[in-house]
Amino acid sequence: MTDAEDIEAAIHACVRDFYDKARADPLLGPIFAAEITDWDTHLRVIDDFWSNVVLKTTRYAGQPYVLHVPLPIAHEHIERWLELFEESARKALAPAQAETVLARARTMGDSFKAGLFPFKDKDGKPSRHPV
Ligand code: HEM
Image 1 (cartoon, rainbow, N blue to C red):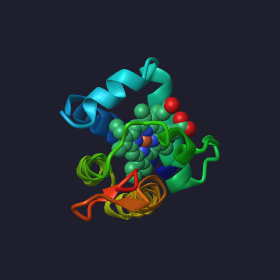
Image 2: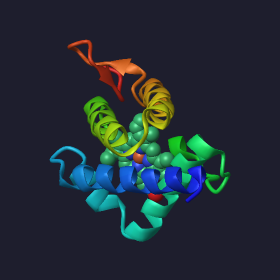
Image 3: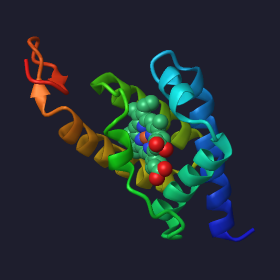
């Protein structure tokens, strides 16, 4: 196996580990169950996304932010997503690649939050709607 093949295999394992947990998660699971009909395709797209992040494979050419706008995502969904993804990345990937994917995931989490929750609710929590 080349280094790149090892890394692709580790990304594959990371993505499966993440989705096993995310689909069983009380907060995230119902959203994925409602939205994803073709799991083989979704997992392949997600593999391609992360392999582009780590290996610049250029197989992914989508726009993740736009796809998340219509989803019923609250602030805590993003926190939970990042928590589960960090566990899977640290378990499946070598430390250098784990740091690379986690840095990108956090940046995306920050931009999702900034874009999706521009308001604060009456308790000062980020919100999709003005008070
Ligand atoms: C920082 C956190 C997140 C990252 C990095 C991320 C990343 C991605 C990526 C790369 C895609 C593939 C887009 C494509 O098909 O081109 C995707 C799709 C999707 N994500 Fe996320 N995601 C995040 C948070 C979430 C959360 C919190 C949820 C809620 C359960 C979620 C649910 C989905 C769904 C349902 C799709 C499929 C959308 C569609 O095909 O219409 N994601 N995500």
